[in-house]
Length: 368
View 1 (tube, rainbow, N blue to C red):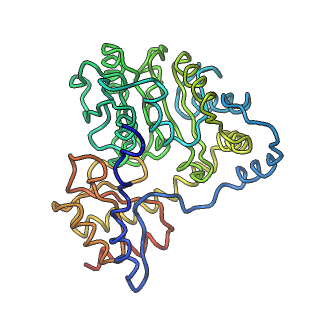
View 2 (cartoon, rainbow, N blue to C red; view 1 turned 90 degrees about the horizontal axis):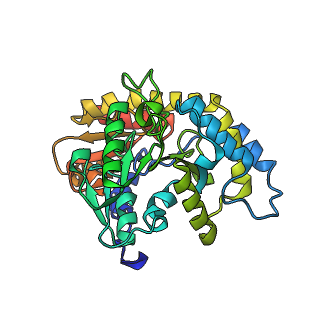
C-alpha cells in the first residue's frame, strides 16, 4: 500500500454539516477539529522573532539547549527524572511521527500495529501505509502475537480517558513479552479535569512507577500544540529508549525531517515557562465548565472525558444524526465514526473555541 491508496481525508465528509451550521443567524460555533484559537504566548513569539537569523541547516537531533529543555521538562512536569539528551528527539509536530513511525521502524506486511479502540485515525494510517495490520484493542492480554508496535493514548483523543500507572505497567510488561515497541501519545497530559487528575499529574509511560527506571522498548510522544497554542509551529518531541531514539534520528537525517531552527529556539522558551501553560489550562477549564452541563441538559451523555481537550458524548443515536441535530443549532462537532468502528453513536466536541463562542453554543443547547 502507498500514500495514493489511502482513503479520502475523513474531515471532507463534514463539509455539508459545516455549511448548514454557518447558516445559523448567529454564525457557526466550530467545535470539530480542535485547532487552538488563543494567542501564542508572548515569551514564545519573542524567542522565535529573535531567532530568525537561521542561515544554517538546523540540527535534526535538536540543539543542545532544546534537548536539555525537554529533559528538564520531563523531570519537572511529568515526574520522569534521569533522562539524558540521548533519550530525546524533536519532531515536526506529533502527527508526522505517528504516521511515519511504522515506516521509520521498518515495519511491513505481516506485522501488527495495536492502537486504542477509540483512536486518532493516524495510528491506523501509519500501519496501512507500510502494509502492516492495524488492530484496535484496549486490553494488553488481548494483544496478539506478531505485534511489533503498540500505540497508547493517554489522555485519549477522542475520549479523554486516562491510563493510570498500574495499567501502563501492565502494558509495558505485555509489550515486552511480545517484543513490541510501546509508544505512548501523551499530548494532552497537562489537561486533567476530574479527580484524581485535577490534582495529580497524569502519568507518563516513562514514569519510574511504570518502568522501574528501565525505558527499553518504550517511547513517550508529546506536542506543544495544545498546552502552548503552538499548533502552527509544529513543535513536538519524543523521549525514551536511547537506542530507538538513535535509530529514528538516523532515519530522520536521511529523510530531511528537521525542525526549523527558530522553532527549536521557541520550544526552549515554551518548555521553560510553566505560567502560560497554567493560564491556558484555566481557559479550557472554564470552557469545559460552560459546555459540558449544557450538552448534558440537551440530552447527551458525556463518557470518560476526565482529561484532554474534548468531550466524548452520545445521545443514543447515530453520530451523523447527532451531527445534523447540532448543525441546525449552528454547532459543528466530529462524528465518532472517524475514531474507529466501535463508537458509531458518539460525537467529539472540542474546547478550542473562544469564550464567546462556547457561551453561544451552551445557550443554544439549553434552548432546545
